[in-house]
Length: 440
Ligand code: C2O
Ligand code: CU
Image 1 (spheres, rainbow, N blue to C red):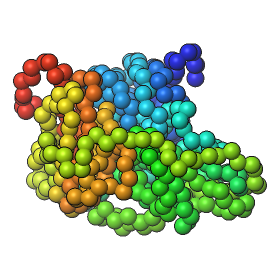
Image 2: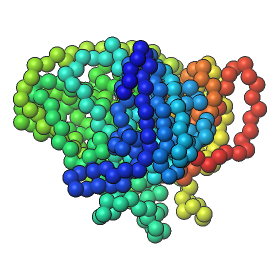
Image 3: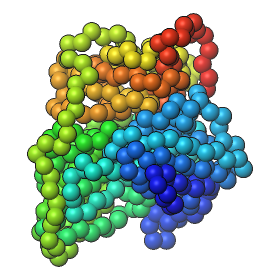
Image 4: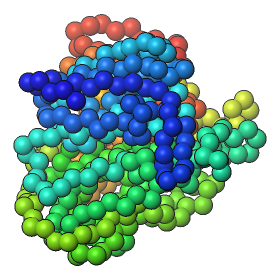
C-alpha cells in the first residue's frame, strides 16, 4: 500500500490460485492478489481510494464497493460499467466519506466468483472511533466443496433446486479464508471485532458461548449507544461491529453461529467458525463512551410511504422457481429524484428470508411490521423474515446515475430478485420506460 497525502492506492490482480483453507487442504480459489479474502483496504474518512484492477481470470469481472457511497459510475455493476474482460484493467477511484466496516466483492457471475473467494474487507477509520486495545476483522464465509475440495455445481434436478431455493450453503466454514482458525487476544483487554458476512447464503447468528458483547456499529458505522446482547444475526452482506472483553486468561471464546431457521431444505444447526484464545493479561487503554454518535432521524416512523417493493417466490415451469420483485424478474423500477426523501415499504410475501440490499445509499429502518427497530442505525442491508413488511427511509443525495437493490442471497439475486433504478437530477425531465432490463 502506498499512501501519499490523502490518496490511498492499491493494485489488485484478480486470478485463480491455490489457497490453503487448512493444513493440507487446498482449493482452486479465485480472488485478489492471490489471497482469500483479498487485501484489507484501510483508509481514513475523507481519503480518496484508488484501486487499479487487472483481470487475470479467464472470464470478465467487476468490483462492487458494498456500503461505500461511491459515484454511480464507480459502483461496479453491469448498469454502470463494462465488465473488465480477461487481460484488461480498470481503475476505481472514489472518496470514502463514512467511517465503518465495509467490503468489496465481485459483482459479476457472483454465484461463482464470490463463492470462490472474490471479496475483501474495507475499514475506514475516523477520530471519533472509540479507543480500543485491538481490532479484528472476521470475514464470514462458507464453501460448498466436494470431498476433494472442489467446487461443483449440482447437476441433478433436486440438488439444483435445493441450491437455488436455499442459496449455496456449504459446510466448509471459513473465517478470513481459513477453517478452524485459532486467534488470540489478551486478558483484561477489550477489542473491537468487525464482522462481515461475505457468504452466498449463510445466516450467521453470532454467539460467543453465552458471553455478553456490545454492539457498537452496523452497516454504516457507529450506532448511537452500545447495545449489550448475547447473540446477533448477521445476514449475507451485513456488517456488525462489537466490543468484547475483558476475558480471563486461558478462556477459549468460540465464534459460533447459532441455528437459525430460514425455511431451508438444509437443517439449521449450531456451528463453530473459529475460536479465540485468551492469553496473559495486558493493561487496557480501551474506552467505550456511553454515547457513540448522534444519528439524526431521516423521517418519523409514521412517514407516508412513497414506494412499495414486493419480494416473492413462485413456481416456474421454465426455471423451477422464480425469485421476483414486484412480480417480475430483473426488473426496472421507477426513478427517484435527487433530494426527494424516499420512504419505501419492502414487503416480503414469501415464506423464506431475504436480505434486502440497496446499493450506494444508507437507509434507516423506520418500522418492521409496524414496530420501530431496537436501535437506530445506518443500514444498507436488512433481513426480511417471511411475511414481513419493513419500512425504510433514505435520501438520494447528489449522485445521479443507475443503481440497484436486490436480495443478497446470491442465488436469489441471480434468479431474478433484483431491480435497477435511476437517481435523476431534479432538473432533468425523465421519460419512463419499463421495457427492457439487462441480464447481470
Ligand atoms: Cu454486496 Cu449488489 O451487492
Ligand atoms: Cu432471497
